[in-house]
Length: 471
Ligand SMILES: Cc1cc2nc3c(=O)[nH]c(=O)nc-3n(C[C@H](O)[C@H](O)[C@H](O)COP(=O)(O)OP(=O)(O)OC[C@H]3O[C@@H](n4cnc5c(N)ncnc54)[C@H](O)[C@@H]3O)c2cc1C
Image 1 (cartoon, protein in one colour):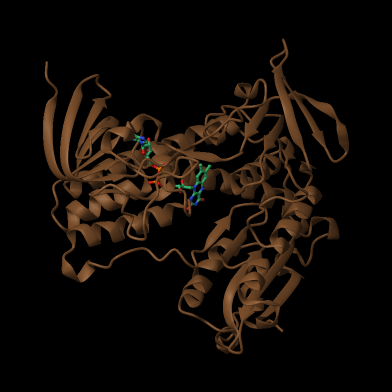
Image 2 (image 1 turned 120 degrees about the vertical axis):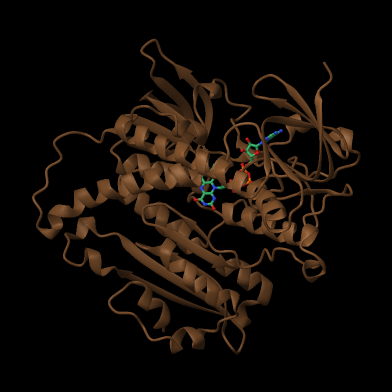
């Protein structure tokens, strides 16, 4: 039987952060006949295996930390049983499922037709969708958006790497691993190592260099790595892994070298090994060759101009599949700007996302926030003479009445440029950094100077007040 054929103005492949934002605006706000295709669960990476379940787990880890510190404030709380990971996971899964339903309802409200299936191109304006129920639908569209995101990767050259999990597997764990190893220095590995550690797993973090979070300012890299070690995470520096194997008892053994064991050694008795070594664009199944010459980077990301146009007319791409700034609000903002430009009329003909000064945070323990240039980037861009740096390191009041061994550090760095001392970078580490950064982000996006910061009266007693009183 020939497949059903549908026609639309706008076809969106990928029901994640960027795709849904774009489809809903195109249809709900501008009335474009829009179809959205999602092969797994609505909400994409962020809702199902990213930001949302991650932050909920981070909250669990923060509760564990607070319980641990409660005695410092005079509470005589005794933990009588270990953290019930299974019960927590069940609640977290139910929350994610609820969100999937809300996302489907939102599509309905905005009159976007939703197809649950896997899409591949059959031509530059046509796609075939294999639906979950086994049927096939052909869709012809005037314009097509590729918002298929990315997926975590396993190392190719390490024997037995498939015995480990990726960040997706983190959310499938039914019980808390007693002993866990994570490989990777990016924010996902660092966040997950922090959560495992706080929730009571013996945690080993393997990194290639001496510090982690290598795209962040050196202050953040050094202080967070130090702090993780202080908290008991075993950080294996300058490491490389050669093999992963499973014993008859089901436990894993990781073969590796690091700065303390340059000739190689093993870590045994592991319940879980998590590879956090990076993500690749999800383009493999799209049959891109059928659309003509679509430009991709060496890693497979789709190349787009500042308006999210690919090299093929009427095909657009945004979000993680382009690999520029892989964050949910970036994909959403790019999606909304694109819908405005394509369907919002003349007033939006120039609508596009400005990718500069995008704030980002890491839900590590402690939290990290950053916006703008790191100190080395600023010095390189403007020259040493044009850059001034303000630093502050202190103990947040929360820790003031605690034993020295329990005190977590707080460190802030402001990078300013030129005579006016325009703020070009802000790097913060400490309790509340994630919430703190959003407001400062607005000021920096508006072009704030150090004087503007100083003119704002401090809120006392907070950690954030240090940022408006830097000397
Ligand atoms: C562990 C983890 C934690 C994260 N934490 C944060 C955070 O705290 N804050 C933050 O801002 N960002 C975070 N991110 C990043 C964020 O999740 C992504 O940047 C965001 O989801 C990208 O949105 P997207 O629309 O580009 O792609 P996605 O959300 O990945 O959506 C793409 C969708 O396309 C679907 N798809 C792929 N191929 C096809 C096909 N052929 N046919 C049909 N459907 C297809 C996929 O199933 C997927 O649902 C995190 C990511 C991870 C992995």
